[in-house]
Image (cartoon, rainbow, N blue to C red; front, side, top):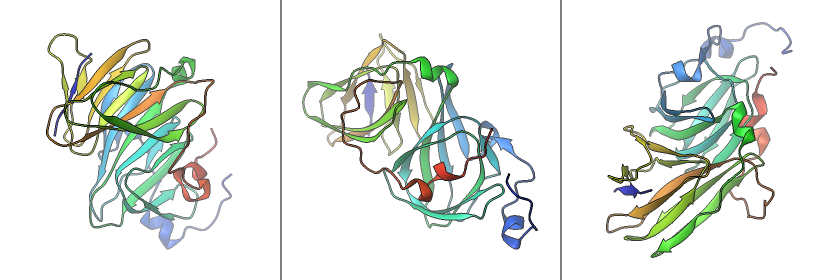
Length: 252
C-alpha cells in the first residue's frame, strides 16, 4: 500500500539476572543497531525500531523524553540499569510518553518482531506550538487520538481510497504498518525512507495533504509536536505508568 504525501540506586550484590542483562557498557540510542535513525532535525529524532523474535538490544540510553508508538506488539523484558527486569506486554497501537534518562536492555520474548516508532523530543521542541487538527478535504477519513500530553500527541489516521486529509505542522508522519510515503513531484515535504517505516517531517507553520492511492483504506501515524491550550480530546491506550517504560528512567 502507498500513501502519497503532497504538500541512588543503592549498591547491591550482582544477581544472575543482572549478569544476563549487562549494562556495564551503554551506547546512545542512535548507536543501538536495532534502533534505526530515520529523521533528525533541531526539534526531533525519529527512529524505526525492530527487535527480532528472541533477540535483545544492546544496553542503550534514551537521553531525552520520547514518544513511543507500537506498530507490532509483543511480550518483552525491559531491564533498566540498577533495577530488576520488568516483563511487559505491548499490544499493537499502544502509545506512551517516556521520560528522559532511561538506560536499559530490551528483549523480545515473542514469536514475531517487536516493531515501534520512537520520536525523541529535543529541548527546542518545548518552544513549539501544536498545529491544527487534521481536516478532511476529499473523501472519507477517520482519526483517533491515541495519546494527548502537554508537549505532544499521537494520532492514528485511516484514509479511504482516493480521500485526502490535510496535516499541519509541526508533526512527524510515519507509516509503520506496511504503507509507504511517496512525495509529490513538485511541492514535496522530504520523505525519509526505511524498510521498516517511512517518516516525514512537517515543519512549524507548514501543511501537507495525505491521500490514499490504492483500493483499500490506509493508515498513517501522526506525532503532533508542541504545546496547546486546548486538551479536550479523549485519550485511549494510555498505559499504567507502573507497567510502562516511564517508570524507570534514571535521574539526570
